[in-house]
Amino acid sequence: MPSLGQLYPLIEDVELPDDIPYTQCSRFELKFLYLIGRHRVSGTGELVELGSGGGGSTYAFARGLSHNLDFDRSTGRLHAYDFFRVGKGTFATPKFFRGGKAPEGESSFLDDFRAALGSHMDFIEIHAGDIWETSDPSDTRPIDFLHIDIAKTENVWRAVAERFLPRLREGSIVLHQDFASPRLPWLHYSTGLLLPYIEIAGAPIRSTLAFEVVRPIPDEVLDRIAGDAFTLEEKQALISRVQEHVDIDYSEKIPFKSVLELAKAFTAHYAGKHRQAWQIAAPLREVPYLAAHRTDHFEQLQRELTKAAAPAARRPASPARKLARMVKRAVTR
Ligand SMILES: C[S@@+](CC[C@H](N)C(=O)[O-])C[C@H]1O[C@@H](n2cnc3c(N)ncnc32)[C@H](O)[C@@H]1O
Image 1 (cartoon, rainbow, N blue to C red):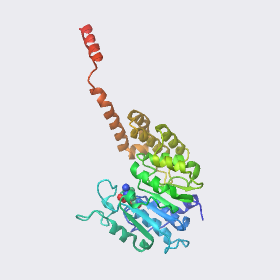
Image 2: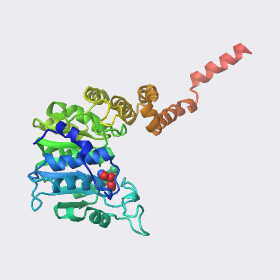
Image 3: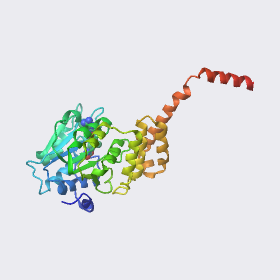
Image 4: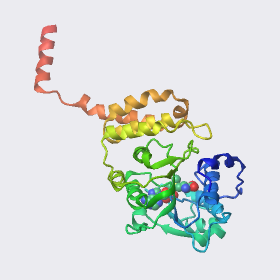
């Protein structure tokens, strides 16, 4: 079996059909998913996709599996987890519907997902609903492949960390699709803690960081990740460790060292340290990629800093300050 790194030179030559379902993944990521499905998994362990959306990423991986001579589609299973519906708090877009928008009165795009996956549906098992409800805490079956495109909140990340990461073994492959999202720093500092047990495939493929587990992950490491048991300083130090391993992405568009620096700012922001968050973030406005693609992040951090500073300005003067003001007025009159 090729290593993950050996798949990189094959990316350019992958041809995917034009009618692939709408996806929020880039063409590069889809091609890499295809290659992993085709060359890097056998299907003896579970294959899991968290956050399948309208099925674009699922389709690319499933197509690779269907071209993989080692994959037995009568026994191999690709588990697809998603709300499969739009609505408040789902992070799903109406673009996941076949027509690009939700039909009148309809919120579920599950039928459209099934139709889009077509002939691959025989080996796909759907888990529709909130991941906390649809995942089984007693399931310990080993996972060979884990695509994570769901951890948009800390709460959902905890579900991933508690219920899926403990099922990784040596040889398991993990893809973090949101690695270019500074607002999700739990992906970055958890990867920092995992570094002694994983091998990073190479440059991130656009937003996706891929790695292989090469040593058993100790329970205490998994518990710390699931319990988010880190101080702010530890989170930032762990992100620094990841910065030593990533730089510009495969498509030469995303400067990951700077993206991860902005992720550190968000660890401070979530800890209520708005001044520190802004101190880290402000200089990053000079990075062209971040200035062009993460303006809203800077605005958010600056807004929070202003809000945090406002109550102090409006705070009623203490008796001592009032007295000092009266004395000053009297003296300067
Ligand atoms: C970025 S989209 C996935 C995109 C997809 N991989 C593609 O190729 O376009 C993230 C998905 O995560 C799902 N999601 C977010 N939180 C979830 C939760 N708590 N339980 C189940 N699904 C969730 C959303 O429904 C959404 O479809």
